Image (cartoon, rainbow, N blue to C red):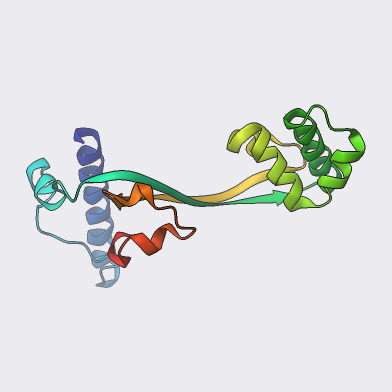
Length: 155
């Protein structure tokens, strides 16, 4: 936490300097900054204290890949399929991996997210993810929508 607080103080100082320079130049403040000094560790702990008991974390995200070579992605997907299902034939792999979605699915199945990031024919362009803390007792229920078990304030 100390490294974060130090970084936040430096960023706040730089943003304040920008505001001062902008005000001197044209009389406006481009950034709405909270001028109260409330970034001490104790303030952070007061604002982010212990919450409800949590026994499950849902990891929710989106990864966007730029496809640069469809044939290479299909080949990577078919190789991944053959790795996961070594007894199946090349024909089985061609039948199962027939588009970008099925290729990416097989790459993810065989190699995880790192395999998608390393796959030939596409590159990771952007991503976003978050964790949603599910309340104690939620682990015995699996819902396809993890947000249905969290309040909108948690998202």
